Amino acid sequence: MFLLRRFSIAVLAALAILLFYLWFVLLSPFGYETPDDLPPVAAGEHQVFVYGTLRFGMVRWLVYGRWDDPQEATLSGFRRDELDLEKAPEVQVNGYLLDVDAEELRRLDRYERLGIRYRRERVTLDNGTSAWVYRRLDTTRD
Image 1 (cartoon, rainbow, N blue to C red):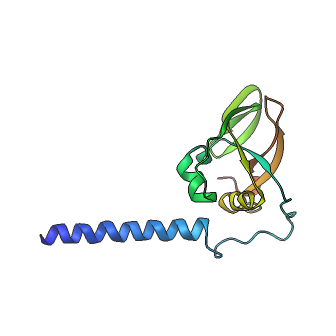
Image 2: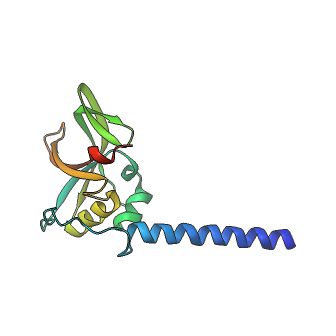
């Protein structure tokens, strides 16, 4: 009984730490401020090509509150390089195309630490759609 109680306390503590971490990283006003030199997010709908953790519905739900059903998409002329995309002719990256509003795009910017770890740039997908994609900043590359 004693071990079961200690195990339960340890599991609850680990869960509390995980929830605090997710809140701090994804929702809190602490830990990230948009750099002053970034342009404001335009109102309206935006398309974002995702190729990493944002391919997973649970991650999208945690980041911007929707477990949507994104469209599969490909981006030619790039290959995945760990957490980034690298230009590479005759190669393509598979991912998803997200349709988000301005507030959801701001939440994605926060998740990706826009201006600190990533930059957001326009690309043209293989289906002709113009979309945002997040790419690592060269100065923070691990």
